[in-house]
Amino acid sequence: MTHLKPGDKAPPFEGPDQNGNTVRSSDYKGKKLILYFYPKDNTPGCTAEAVNLKENYELLASHGFAVVGISPDTVASHQRFAGKYGLPFPLIADPEKKILNDYGVWGEKKNYGRTYMGVHRTTFVIDEEGTITHVFTKVKTKDHAAQILGEV
Image 1 (cartoon, rainbow, N blue to C red):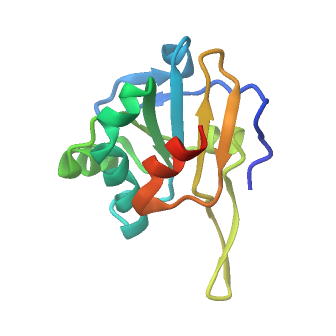
Image 2 (image 1 turned 180 degrees about the vertical axis):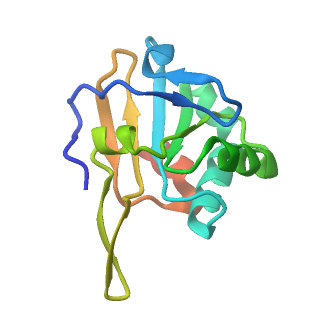
Image 3 (image 1 turned 60 degrees about the horizontal axis):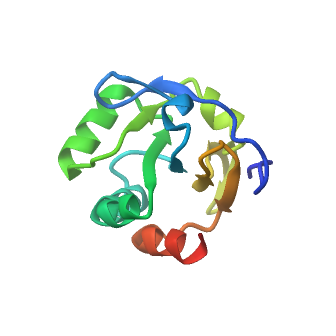
C-alpha cells in the first residue's frame, strides 16, 4: 500500500502514453488531476474502471479534472486497450515500475492463498499545486467517478 497521504506533494512522473507521447506531471501544473493506477489492461476490473472514467469524462472535466491512468503494461498494450474502449485520456506505460514504486502502489499482494508482486489499485487526486488531496485505496471500479466526485 502507498505511503503517500493527503497533504503530501505528489511525486513527479514522466512516461510514454498509448500514442508514444511523453506525459509529465508538469503538464498538469495549475490543473486538478485524477491519477489512477491499475493492474492490467483488458482485465474485468481494470476495464470497468477505465470505462466508468470514460463515461464520466465530460462530467469530471466540468469539475476541472484531467485524468491519467498508469499501469505496468506496454505502450502497445495501452494502444490496443485505449482504442478498443475509446478512452479519451492518456494511459502511461510503466513496465520498469518507476512511477508505480514512486507512488508506493507496487508491492506484495495475496489472492487465493498465493503471494505475488503486483499493482495495488489506487487513485490519487492532486490539486493545482501538485499536492495530494485524496487517496482512494478501495476503488469502486464500476462507479469510480461518482466515488471521486462524492469525496472531493
